[in-house]
Image 1 (cartoon, rainbow, N blue to C red):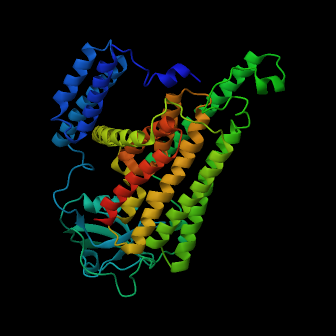
Image 2 (spheres, rainbow, N blue to C red):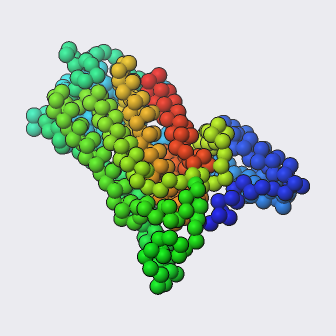
Image 3 (cartoon, rainbow, N blue to C red):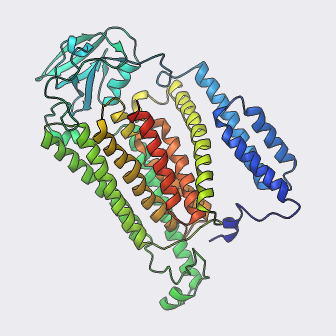
Amino acid sequence: MNDDLRTSDTAAPTTRGAPHVARASLAFHVALGCVLLPIVSLPFVVGAALWAWRGRAGAPLWAWRLAGLALVDLLVAGALVSLWLRPSPRLAPVAGPRPVIGVRIDDAPRGVAVEPVEGGPAALAGLRPGDLVLEVDGARVERVEDLQRAIGEGPLSTRRLRVERDGASFEVAVEPTRGAATGGLRAGRRGLFVPEHETSTCVEAALPRPAPATLALLALALALALALWRHERRVGATRDERQGGATRDDRRVGATRDERHGGATREERHGAPSGARFWLPFAGVFGAAWLVSMLARAGGCALVGGHAPGTFLLTLALQGLVLALGGAWLARRGQKVGPLLPPLGHTRTFAQSLLYALGWVPRAGVLALALHGLVEHVGLLSTSDVAGRAGTALDAFADTELGFAGGALLLLAGALLGPLAEELLFRGALLPHLARTLSPWRAITASGVLFGLLHVHHGPSIAGPLVMGVVLGWARARTGSLLVPFLLHASLNAASLTMVVLLR
């Protein structure tokens, strides 16, 4: 391990340069917190960067950081202006509530299955529970996101829907309204575990149909994992060549120099899994969780006669439990690693991590939205090619009345089991494993990027998980513990779910 990289983040300054380092560090963190005023605060951020750059001899690292932050804020200001002047159709702000036709919707093997709300536009137009919407104004509808986008981002005027019922297709004219459609579901259709509509084949409906962008992100995650595996094998081969004719016992005990990892020597860490012994079980945990979740969703669908919010919530909780158990197993069989960076107290690490999350995630999100709009504008990407959900749980339940039991299940799955599983897998197992062959910051970055890429349903907002992966990895590296990253992860998830879903 490169010990110089490990200590370069907070290397002890000289006595004469200590005041300037402290002032430069304070300026950076204040500028980072100016995210709430991205354009108004730009002169301060640029001025702080120029001030630090003039005295960079006393604090070169903070001068570079402030210069980078000023550059990012300049790009963010330009992105905000471009989004305001020429928003993309998908990202354009909607004045007031979006148009709706008053239906509950779910994916189906063909089109989108709907169940009208009594008294809503769809019910008045003659749609019935179980009808399949195939087209809207001639545009094909293949997923729930397609129908949501076609209605919610379309004009507030008559829309022509091609509908299939009992094998026959026909057109229906529907007049959307703004806001949530009033009225209740038909009699007998209330309750958390009452299906929103019947499905002809629960197994087919449970299987996801990924968008092209989802497949692309999964391919990138697989390519990164394979590259890390190859690097690990190359490092191992180089060590074998250096050891030359040493016996196996010599190689296990002292042929290479001892490197400290939280107080453990290479000899003490020899039993940690490497290569295929780590990566195949790591991938197997995700495969097992996916298989269990698909079987649970199909079983719940068959049990209650269709997909229901409650069965989906239980599926998410069960998936999180499987991932958490797998992550705990991987972390237990791996090496025990203390702080990878100079240690920092738990309270201060939590406070700084929260500031970094709140400062960098919005900046990255704005840049990602602007880039997505630019790519879409020049025709390199179609809106339908994007995995359109901004978070599975948020989109799936944003318009659902969950009640106390549903809210508790949502928080259990999204704010407890989910963060626990991801911290055990990525910061408890993956990060220490990567730190065996990579410098601390490279290990943090690689594990954070892989963490972000696997959030495939976030669409353009995947920039958030990418940034959070690095922030959470930094918190783990500074404390040597999973407590701070778990608390930060759980707190942010709970706040998001509460504001966006439960208080909506």
